[in-house]
Picture (cartoon, rainbow, N blue to C red):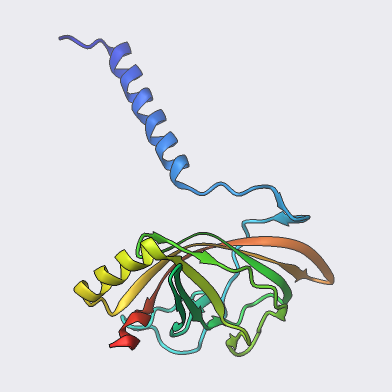
Amino acid sequence: MVFTGKKIGGMILASLFTCCLTTNAQQPKYPKEIRGYKVVRAEVEAKETGTKATDEQPDSEPVIRFGNPQLARVTPLGISFEIPMVVAPVKRKGHVDFMVFEEMMVNNTSVEIDEYHRGFDLPNKEPLTLTEPLKFYVFLPSAVLGAIDEWNDSKKTWLVTGRVYVFGKYKKSFFSFKRCIPIELNVTIPNPLLQLR
């Protein structure tokens, strides 16, 4: 089969178009507004910690991180966990009204996380541990399979992925703007089922 210059050019353009579609499909699409808050893909920058970065401790600290999860309740319908949440000090001042979690997964198992309706000011100097922990729930069929899998694999950590929408008022110069900032999560937490051993 002989390819002419036009055919090769067309094939290259088609390949580039397909690559662009694939790349765009991988990036999350956010709505323009949620609950009266304009969604802005602004970067919430954590302040420098002042310590030298190492392999164990990267120089850029995540804005939101989780503490050690606790097993809260086991019922015939599922398992409930509570996780302390720590917010890193940030460069810009603001007040968080509430947070909503979306597409949350723990080790590729879908979980429900309650909306967080405890307002707080964004810290500017020291990390802030929120007074109320996050609560998430795993339905029994997934919980049973997940628990068996975890016992067999003896994983010390779990991978938590998903998205948190942070609703609040953020300051820029002398003005305060009502905004919703999406933050993509990809963190590990200690395996709380190891507490049962």
